[in-house]
Length: 599
Figure (cartoon, helix red, strand yellow):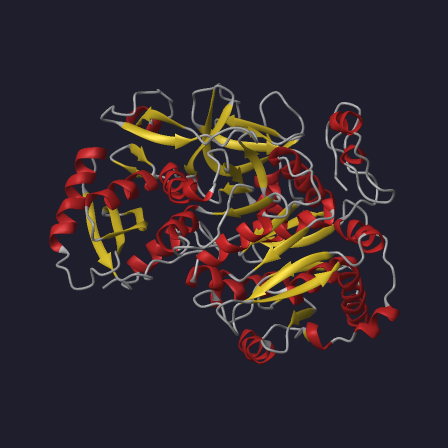
């Protein structure tokens, strides 16, 4: 069975069995995305339960007991039973519209807990168990903001969860349910709930890269629209497509990877972020295995592709084939170096030159905004650094002394308007000018939880000459030849001596300046004293004298950017703060520096 597009349905003779979603069900006469009434994620799961009952919906590769991993599987029928059982217990102790926070380890229980919450008419708050190191403050902030009436966890994590809740002291204290202790028999007590597409599905808390985490109200319409946009943009119309992901399920892309199967009736293979970091070859092996059956889609930020290229190459004699894989790269300004490094490393294993898809997305838009075409190769444009810092795009040759590369994120998703705007005047800017990225479409969230003023400012922006509300992304970018390029976050922009600088540009220069620097682990930010650069040491350099490296970094930054570094620090590996999705948290790094954490 295929989820087929209208233009291909009659041509190839494929048809979708009655009861399952067809892509044309989600498009209006003009070809724009318009979800049919009641087409929520959980209603689509119900369809799959009926028509694909014994097929695998989710597979989790558990590496906690063996290096080879244990494959735990959940069929659609089993998922339906678990959703109703957990949902019945939630309905017994929580009222419709109340929040239910998921504080569980990565795994199938997390999947069932999240979907059960939504099916029961409650608002899911996907978070993480307190065992995640270094993120207790983020969890504390999110819990006090969402005020959940129930916490869903597992018996293995329940002790730590209850200890953490005792310290957090929420008032009133939420009930705690162990997902894996709820019997299937409880499903008989479940009461069906009518869910409107305008209802809130879940609160997606931001990663905390530029400010404390804040909850985004994501509606059922936004969830469904965004998944359809991704399926159409990346050409995931075949039910044999499998998602393979280690991304945390509290992250927006992690949730999307469990959302795909609900729409097209395929399946996803999951593993934990820790399993990937410890042995990135596990991710490669899983994609290869699934690729022998059908197309595979996965996603990760820059650092993951660099890590896999460095530590995830197959052993001699391993039968690895990545010829059927599509890889989304995003979550931060896309690095052409990361793309080239990964592509070169895995080309001998069948990886197509069109496999990697530079993309742009933000949590406020549920996730997906833009990507390159299915048959396109990743490409970068070289522009003049000084002109770009001043807001103008001037293409130059790659060997130009001031050339800086920016990777195309292609074109916006179907039914989504994406414009570049002067943030001061609210006027749309033409191609070749840098401005703030503004969005309008059904995939945009409803607002920020319990923050009406911030909601109006961010989700209710007025574009000059237009009346509809627009979402301000707080990201900077430009269009060139109709394609979107993302230059960085407004909050991260460094201003010194009246000139703007992108931190990732300075960080790249610092990483190139000395082999003592761990590539991808450099933070540049502005302080009252000037620009500060903090870099983690590369593996095996702990005893090396840092002075020559610091001098080299100062010289390179001065020459390349005409910036005098007020301070340069080399710190141990793992010292720089990162978000829960692995991105560099520059604001937190700056706070670490200011508080003296780096000595």
